[in-house]
Image 1 (cartoon, rainbow, N blue to C red):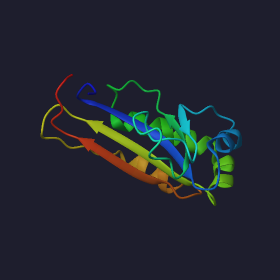
Image 2 (cartoon, one colour):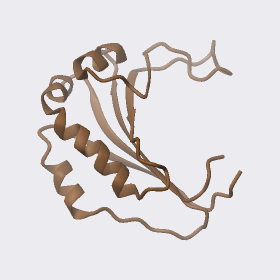
Image 3 (cartoon, helix red, strand yellow):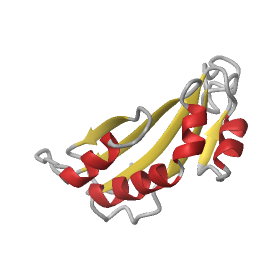
Image 4 (cartoon, helix red, strand yellow):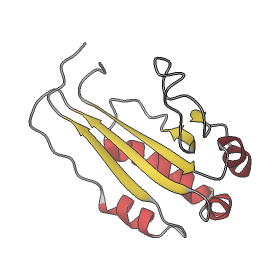
Length: 140
């Protein structure tokens, strides 16, 4: 289990028609991780379940103890600097900003700086923001 009380943000680009290798070459950036359509889902299910799409991921390099805003800020800055390549992907790919918030107690909240929301809204392509919030985690 992950250490409690931290945040993560990841840019996820996925497609049923374009490979992760092509996504990475269009962006000219190495993925933090990726997988291809048809790859097995997990090592335990190697022969049973297969990926239905390819995906390319870029994780925030901010320390997990940094605020969620800091992680999102880093990914949004990447999105702004790569407007043209991302425009080339938007017809075949879904672009998501996936945010994870992990808290050690069962109470919690989060908020986003309005400047970040405005920056995402100003992008020249559609980006969905996904929040995964895990409350009441204990240290492993």
